[in-house]
Length: 561
Image (cartoon, rainbow, N blue to C red; front, side, top):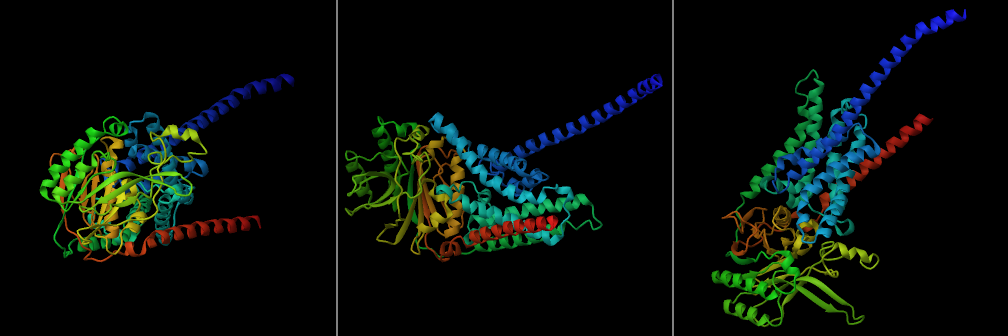
């Protein structure tokens, strides 16, 4: 009996072993496929981030922006929790690292690399949050989603509203970082972006996200091969109709003939001084001589005002008489960037300000505007007193103080009123709106993008200025150290810029612009009422999130019951 059992066991063992081996081989094969699919998702996330970055200057392939939100949702579909967030964060991080690559040109190696990484990580969190919030709806995968049309329609609006709500928060959190919002990619699409006069740049972001998510649903419809081969059109009908209406409005608005007064002639100087030289103290006279030489050439055209960029000319008591004499001979006022100083009468505390000054031709006192929104590590060191080591991440010795109010520069006995903004202040939609009053006829931006050498920063910065002009229906002139010196009309069209003849926007020289002024179209809705659209999207997004959480809790209680 023992032998029979043993023999039976011996006969059955090879079969069991073969069965186990087959099962193990199958499991390993499936595991290998899963690993490959997981690796493919991480690669796809990086590709989405790269395409996202390429939509901005440079190379400004803006069509990619219309695909990014939908592609991002498709990449994170079927994932939950930290895996979902990780994929979204990777895509957003690649986008920020590539689009902010100009930060590596800052001539302070440790601060440049540290700032590039820190800022990219911080900004990527906002976009990743959008994919994390919206991706929860696709945790079962795209193939299992079979929503009715009304649910797909509402989700598209919800996703767009959440995106705008996050941009609104990003523009204000920790002082705000409103750089490279999704709508900015369309800065050259003039008919489309006229909607910004009502919604700000956020309206353009909303349309892009809504359309992109609708395209995703349309593709899913096509893949399911339903009985009606044209059923996918129902997902695209609403966003396409809205886009056609918005662009039609834009075309009609661009055709409006604006009654203007005599053009206002502005001369801007672009000295193209490397940032390293600006930090060195031994070449102030050389820098000043270069600015004065270019100014004297520009004044030959008899402009109404001469503008120097931020941080370009080290004006001192010794060289000021020469500057004043030049202005008197040309009978031309000057707008320039200065470092302003103030000592508190009570405490004796010294405060330094990054400022812009309007110097009249007569002997009246200059009008000074103090910059209100400072650049982190470039103009102030966060937590400077609590964390002293933070100063080593910045090339500046001490922090500037922030100004408190907007200022107007009157030119030509008050016939023209200019509103100055300094550096990246023109990236803040709500900030620039506070500068444009009913009588403001021209925005003036003084900036120094020489920090970033020759790269995409100059055109990215100008792209933001385009939207500030549309939002407030006021033209802007930009005087920059090494580009992009230009003027933008009230419809957001870059009419002329320094270097357009030879293609070199970074070089030294000057430009004279003739700018038609006046507010014949009246103040825009955005200028009068602000971020009504943006706040509405934020409320709508929060309402959708709360409704989702309440529904999940109710469903959980029913299952427990």
